[in-house]
Image (cartoon, rainbow, N blue to C red):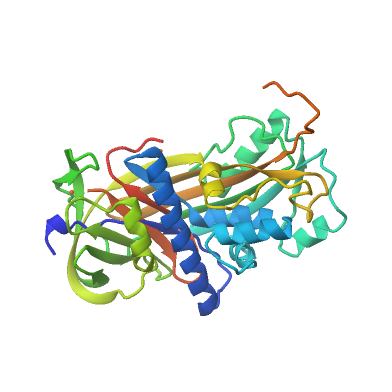
Length: 390
């Protein structure tokens, strides 16, 4: 395989330590890969950024937690938006996949966590706490208009991501509740790349060329897939439970956001076969983040604000989704991968209308997945491996 067909595509997946049935993990992976493609394509069209990374897993967990209390209409909208189609219980399965019965070891490859924080002024319905308890969720009660809530939520995210994402909020979230999903991943490749990474040319999306450290791996220990347009490898991590699919375009123009919809089955690791091959992949690191709410609205996740309560399973008050903040990070080198992600779903109280209120070779895609549960930790496009900032 020549250097001109640099293998590059990133997909990232979330794992839970609890075992998953094969059928469940397949359905989960299908939903997560479709969600990743949709989010990246829409974000690229909106921002035109060189590098984009999202975390379908932490998003599905945070929205899945919110969906527990949503109205019937809200549950349908969230399920469809997250890629589960008519399977209304889909977000709930993503949430449950995040549950870890026992605290993971300090050196566990993946840790996951979910939490919900209710405003202390919100009147909860009688069954809310028992319903959450059935999903192993013990909520916190805080003044979401106060600065302490920022400190506490950021502290939770920092701990859940093992220090990789220290801040998710810059100011008090307000509203009725904040639901959170977070993960931290760190693992070594099953077969490490060569220790030396000579500089090689890489074409940016704007057509310019830069020189980047290009990792190299050759042999017959990997699985590959290719057609007339793309070549890909499914890189395994030590232990066998995780892998990263990397997809590159043969044309040299790179993988575009619109290509990802045709590559959904590739990102799921389907139809890959063991073969002798050669891989050239840039080292890269990325910190990314944005409010996903505008894109999720366009995808139909949040229905039009209704007169009735939007989350009757939690409260009779009129609450609606306001922001979906997500931060992600990834670092890929010869030895392995470190990644983390956190998503905060923030709600708002509807305002009485009588009141007057004044007030992220060529671009490549990546996908890292848990082969047991089918959850995706992160996914994105890298158009400039040397650009690591938010």
